[in-house]
Image (cartoon, rainbow over all chains, first blue to last red; front, side, top):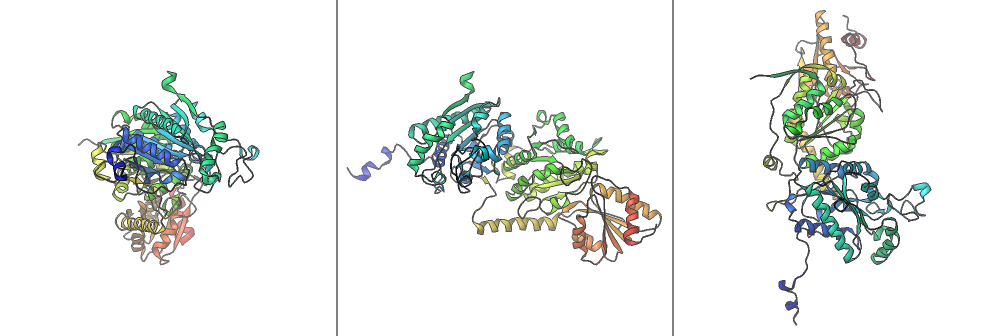
Length: 257
Length: 362
């Protein structure tokens, strides 16, 4: 069989999502951001929301998220995305408004903005990538860094007597009356990515329906920061991250009602 | 036409004027001496009438970033605070300026530094007119000296902010915020429709439609060559504002031997001092800058030519005096009168200052 008989539009079963731009991603090999971006781009397209979506980008590795997903975006100051999203949604209640934040953004510098937006039950979706490290600034300790984990600012491993305990912010957010859906997912396997996609879709649906704040935490890898190969990163994540940050729904108001 | 005349505090006038201007959203956090702005808005419930959003935020950091988010969607949004709270807002103000977004911020100043006092002050002049946040940016700064101007500057502030795509600040002090005066409230205007916003603000986040590229509001640019170009664009805007928007008011400067330069509540006190001096034949005039940035350098230089001296009177240790000195190029002696820590002087103290600094006898 000739190659051009195989590669023809009739046989196409998968392609780049329409809303994922052609820009070359700046993410490192093995990084989880690319997969999550792809999922978001697919979902906004599948849900017919391109003209109706406003994204709020963070400070962190995903600072350039607006270069990749073809919707209107505002770039927040570090940690302030939930405050921006609060106003964007309140002033434009028909819009699908989501934030995309890392662990430092959501649970260190932006803890107050995150908790209060969630506690007010703002009708937004928060997509939270937890890779336990500050990737963009060169691999320093994050609030979610595990005990004993080596980073640029914990070169001998995180010590709880010096640095406190790893912070499971999603578990905290699930306690708030304003959240309707809090879940922890991953994208390291095809099966996990499919589940993560369902979770983000649910979060977007909740935001559109005005059910309150949804939080989708994605436990992800940072090969560069962890100084491991992509494959070894996945294994390390499964062995270490999932123990402190177990996958699954932390709150699902639909089910509970 | 029946004018809507009321007696109210400056802070209350801001709230009423905001609703009547057709503001889309107010985001604020309580702090003395400006809490009446948020309280009045909550009591008037504009979400039931004009559809205006009013939200008490968890901090001034959050409220300025709510303003940033709202402004990015092309809406007319504002916040208010007092000095310590405005210090917290500097991050967001820098982002607003760098993202070329219109917004209105009200600072009803109290005495600092630190937690300071809840009493009136003008000690945020430097912070407001010279920067405050990081980077080369400017705020359009309006200094009201009456309750009427508190109301009027809401619309002026928003009009200038949208005209130049730059945040504007009403820089009041505790006296103007708290005192009650007669005020003529403006007519109720409708809020802009989604269609009007799309037309007026093609840069705004209104949802990416097939007829345009996605709109991105960001202050980030890692390519230094482009970032310098961005800065050059900001500077061109500032030059344009400096050329077109200087505002000030003169009182009896034509025949004056001495000039007082004062803004806000201090200008009211100095006006009384001018009247008292003239009763005993001492010819003092007053120039009140209305825009603190752009500053009326040229006007002050022209008006002060040939005068014996200028007294800059402020509720601070001497801040605007630096701009007055720049204006007159050492051609006229410039002295300062200031009170700090929330003390509001009386007109006699101003006159005594003329005796002490310039040897004027009354």
